[in-house]
Image (cartoon, rainbow over all chains, first blue to last red; front, top):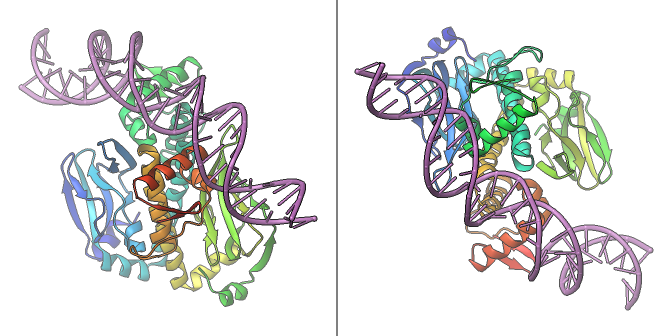
Length: 198
Length: 198
DNA sequence: TTGTTTTTATGACTTAAATCATAAAAGAGC
DNA sequence: GCTCTTTTATGATTTAAGTCATAAAAACAA
């Protein structure tokens, strides 16, 4: 996360996005660094028959879509506003100037990438070889511990819909619903008027 | 990739690993930066019933296992020598000194992380929602284009075994074998005495 | 060259999750 | 409050990939 002052200093602009608006498309070259000011942005893919896969959901303060900027690659996914949002947009060239002149910012970005790589490594191993229940539990626990930083003993009210969880784990809604129900029976998590608490 | 001179300067040591030797374990805290001198190192996970998932295979010149070093996390997987190997080992503290004093090295490491994140993003979307044939093709093409940097028109002889491909995509050997055969019939790839050419 | 291990191959069978259909409950808008 | 949309829920059925068993081919070692 880069401070507003620094972003302004290097000429970043605010971009407004209405719900469902697409910020960039898969397989295109990146031109900007992006950081969420308000709202929620998701990065996602669609397979041949239209099934969505959500790479990540980014909220206030989070940057997204930087890897292709560094690695000279195209975007691996779309970026779309989940709700009405505002983001900072900083030109690639300016972004690299900023990094060069502010090494502590560069280190913080590297840390963010490292954290995301850790999440992906965890999820890809799960998705490829674990049961739906295990996958979902890993997802929920990852959000609780790493995204929202809620202590183990405190309850976490999952803000994701069943469909979003399905799209994050590669499952189908029905499978998610059944797995959640089954875990409730086993007392692995609780349901409070259809809301998941863990 | 950090040059030998620089590594030596900061006190890196050579570590020898015999085939199948484990360098670090999943869920432990990182203490070193590692870089392959010779041989091959794989990072892998095992699920409840022992099924392997290969996160990546690293050969000469590649570093691995850096993300948890940056993000203050534990290793998401094991690291094991695929064959007899030698690696550079540099203490965490020294590694960060090196980065601080050599900003171009820091940038190159960030680029490596960005590239790996790109690979993971690509594979996780594939694994979660595509057919075995599609997954395998994506894997093979990724190795051809991004790892070995072979031009599209030149043939690429896949060096991975069916089992390794299965472990990289979350499939079973039998499924890989059948999918490869089926793709040969469709002329998507060639088989030359059981070796895959794409 | 022969014996041993690993890799590739194939058929028969099982199963877990996807698919399809349909509905109840909850939430949003007026 | 009522209407429309979205989300959650559940049963019946299908299917693709996993599992199991077994063998041929290739690679490696003695």
